[in-house]
Structures are given as structure tokens and as C-alpha cells.
Length: 77
Image (cartoon, rainbow, N blue to C red):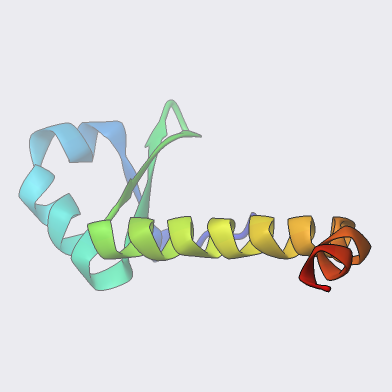
């Protein structure tokens, strides 16, 4: 997973200056919060979360259709 350094912040910064971190999140959709220099949390906008949720659903739907394609075709006849 590649994360740009401009999209990361420390837990201390998130605690002490949440409004700044919230603005960063609005600008970047998603922010990675580090604790002890290790990724621990993801903060993202609702729009980003919903978009990601839809993408996961579409991927799952494609997998199901690919796996059961012949059975689905049979049901369609």
C-alpha cells in the first residue's frame, strides 16, 4: 500500500489539532493516522467511504456472476 506523506499525520496531531486533520481529510478524501510511527487508523470523508463501499459491492457482484455464470444463464431461459 502506497501512501503519500502529505496524507499522513500523527496521533498526537490528530488529538491536538483535529480541525487541521479534518481539513486535510476534506482535501485528500482519506488520511492515515500513525501511532508510534505505525499505521493505526484511517480517517476518510463519507463520500470516500461510500464510494469505496460501492466499489467493494461491484467487485463482489462481478465475482459472483463470474463464478455462477452458467447457472445464471440457465435460470434466464
